[in-house]
Length: 480
Image (cartoon, rainbow, N blue to C red):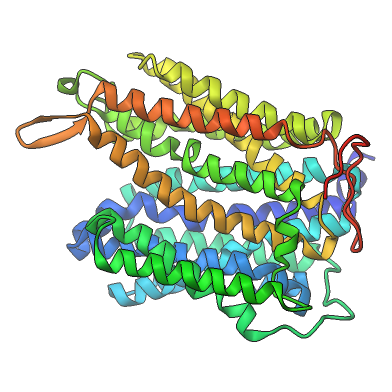
């Protein structure tokens, strides 16, 4: 009986989507383990940095367009195509014989970012409404597991084999995910009636967002006052404004911006911005803290290997945080899930301001931050997908991913500036001081606290929307 229940079509669907998100996340993060070796091999950190930037640019564009492409060509068919492109990208990296070929493959890998919005679209169509929050939480946990596995397995492969094998492992995982989706996912075909899409409206946001992301990335080396950075920001911003103005005048826009203005979509997106600016900088902050040498009078002075191991317990706990967030949404509503995540993150960052000198306390704080953040990663899309029509699910999730990518890069810049504001130096080396770390942690705690305040503005529960409506069950508040 237990085996028969597990083999139900909806459970097999979730298994395939879990595998797809895990494989995509693994392929996206595995390169971070190889960056030091790639810098030595190619001899230029800035050049190697493009492996991260290029992937980010393509990933953001793919996530934004995934929902509409799924509606036009079928969600299942589109997911198979995106997974195949990501697999091809990993294979190109595995057989690359120079940086241009590696760069091309790494950029193609970024197409896999479309998997997450398409997965949620399939889940919403084929899963019972009352079980969607937990299912979405499990898919969110798959992303955390994939990212952790990419860093750990990537390190193991690097210690024993050539770095090309890392991308071979990614291609193998993506191949398995493609087969799982091909065999276990049914339905999600092309809609019967798809309005004609304005091609300019569909493609204009892509170069605009790429320009802004490129400006944020370039500012790390050249500073925000560089003419190229300012030009990219101005050009990208103008293109986005023009696109928004033009899109609002169309009867069938590529992305319905009016959906993003609804309270139950706008507030989760604002929380996404605050999370990206703040608590998503967890690896940057705690990795720096753990490795900070003793002469700075702060940190633990441990190795990079230990810093990576300190993150493992939190990655393990994150597997349970996603389903817990979904369960909390089912039982107590979207507002409670959002509040739980933001409050836990805020308290954890405030506790970190004591600057613990014990690795076990640091691991406990990292676990608190990661658990709360993963709750939010599941609660935010859960709140949004329940508030929009089914055929718009991929659109709002893609827009959320774009916002997260944009402001995560900006958040890293802010953290870097705060680190440098009270730096200490020795033998020409400048590193963050105790005051720098406290400033960063207070800044992130403040952002998280503001996110908790925003969560109060959400209705407790949101009725699942149909294609023609979007209503809250909170009788005292009008969601629209």
